[in-house]
Length: 111
Image 1 (cartoon, rainbow, N blue to C red):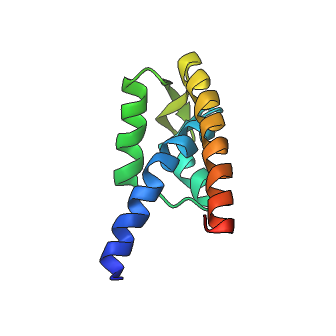
Image 2: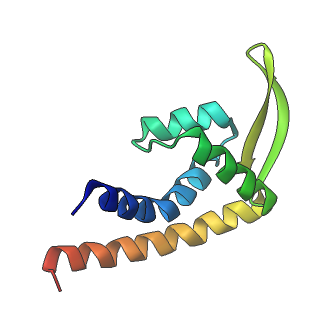
Image 3: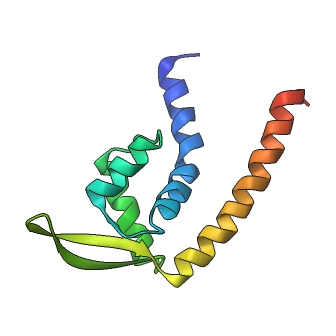
């Protein structure tokens, strides 16, 4: 398998998981750089060109609230889950756990 093909498959695999990771990370208010750093500390490397459009899309969908706050000498836009975002995160977490359990079984048994 070519490295290019593997990279494309890896990207497909990560796409939905990244949404879940961002939602889970925004249970507490964070600005873009702190969110990116937090994700990286948990082993999820997401470049700015992926993260910021995703955060804006989630905000546009009403899943995040945002506000400008003064922090460390400059204003930053902080994001946090809205009530709708909290509800969606709970449902997606349940779905993730079911899917992850099913995949673990399939991968272990090969059936």
